[in-house]
Amino acid sequence: MMTTGPSQQLEKWNRLKDRLQQLEQLTASFVKHQENLRKTLNERNKQALDEMNIFSLQRRLSFQSRLKEHFEKTEQILIAKRRVQRSYNNSVSPMKPRPPASHLS
Image (cartoon, one colour):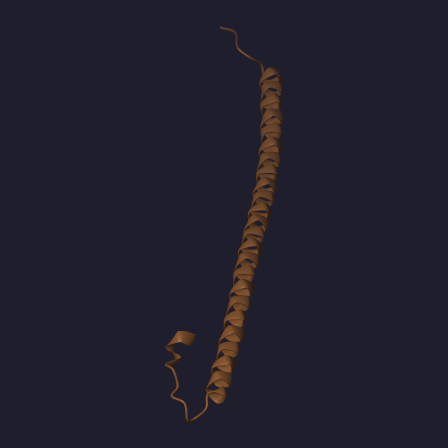
């Protein structure tokens, strides 16, 4: 076996120290890159959730709008039906017997 001298030991130690610094730099770079990826992913997830919420709100508003239109039309039909009923009731003479109102429904 060959023994290594102090200068060879020092050179070996310096190479190991350089490698350790490289690994630390790579680790720091990796951690920073990983954090950037995490931030990007979080932003994209938040954006996707916002888009889903907007889509859901649009669907809900559309449904509520259609429901409101339906109720307004129904209300207009009921008002018109009452007017016709009143008009019919007013047109029938009190002397004549009134037919049942069920045929107007």
